Length: 308
Image (cartoon, one colour):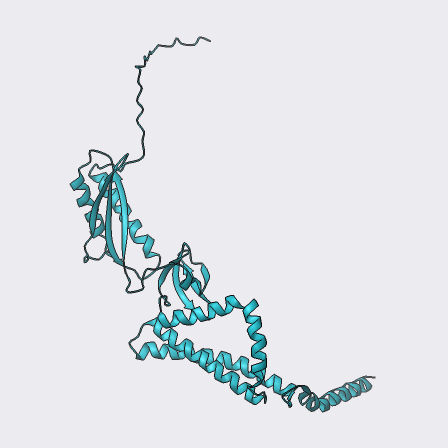
């Protein structure tokens, strides 16, 4: 019994093995009188997939070499490696088409159909792709920049073909379409350099010594190790407010990480509160005074104890 079963399995395997060459050379379709076989299609798809991953790894290595040997910014190295990857992918696609004996002229017909499809269904994709190329060329936004767009603040990690990946202060990742960087107002904190100005507002009660308040604000800022000595901090006596004397101090810091935009001002506020308490300067809070036109008579009576 087992010998008969094994004999049938052996015949089946032998029959399938004999048919493999026929399946491999099986003609799927013809393009411009050129027959495309199943084997050619498998080779072409495999070449595209493997080639993409190999080229992507090579582009990353190229970026590292550029950053290590050339004195350029990280965003420039990323832009060069991205363009090299796009160009290499185009060459790989042309080579694959040549391998499959597909003439390039076929795309004159396919291109018309694709143009209609792009016009109706792929406008956003093409818009973001072209916007990505413009962003990489002009570099208003670069990898490593701290930006604010649509109320979202974060550090740009990568600018892709369709969208950019931004890491927020909460350690979450935001995917922003490339077109947003060209169509909307974008605040780039580190476009020209990594030195930014921060501002802290504080109000003290009326009657406080204003010169002393100014000295304490400068002391609180100057004692922070991350605050730059030049340009020096500036204190502004902003206004006589409804409930307080309002001051503002501006200072400059060198930012290396997005968290520092909030951490440094927070540290300085702690220091301001400590110095104000030590010097008996009271930070103001909203209050209201009530004025009565007619005098009020207030009578205080002694209540009798309640007997059981």
